[in-house]
Length: 168
Picture 1 (cartoon, rainbow, N blue to C red):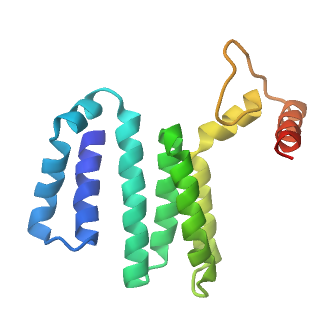
Picture 2 (tube, rainbow, N blue to C red):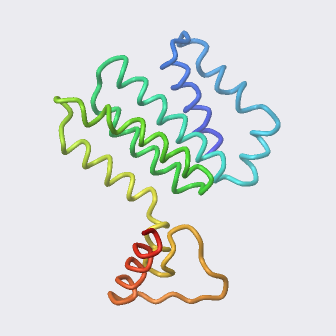
C-alpha cells in the first residue's frame, strides 16, 4: 500500500510540475520500479511513507502558489506532520519547510484562520508519537532504554519544565 501511495504521489507531483496527464502514471510506475525503492517498499515502510508525504507537501505548496489555492497550505502542513511522524530523520527538513512556508501563509490576508488551525491539528496528529514521548519520558525524540513511563500531571509538568530549563 505504501508503494502504491508513492506511485500516486509521484503521478500527482508530476502533474503539478506540468507533465502531461498520459505520462504521469507511467512516470510513477517507472520511478517506483527502481530496485532500491521496490526493496524499501517491501521492508522498511516508514522511510518510503515519509519521503512520499514530504514530496506531496512540496507539491501542495507549489499548487498553492501557482493557483492561489489557500487550502493547499493546509494539506501541506498535514503532509509535513505525517512525514515527521513517520521518520525522525525528516524533522530538520520539516522544521525548515515550516520555517519557509509559515511567513507566506501568515502574510496572506485571505487565508482563513480555521484552515490554518486545521493544518496545525493535522500536524499534531501526524506527530503524535513525539507528544506521547514527551508526556511519558520527558524527551520527545528519544526514550531512555529500560525506563518505564507513567502518565500523571506532575510528571508532565516536571518533564515540560525540565525541557524549558534545559533549553535556556
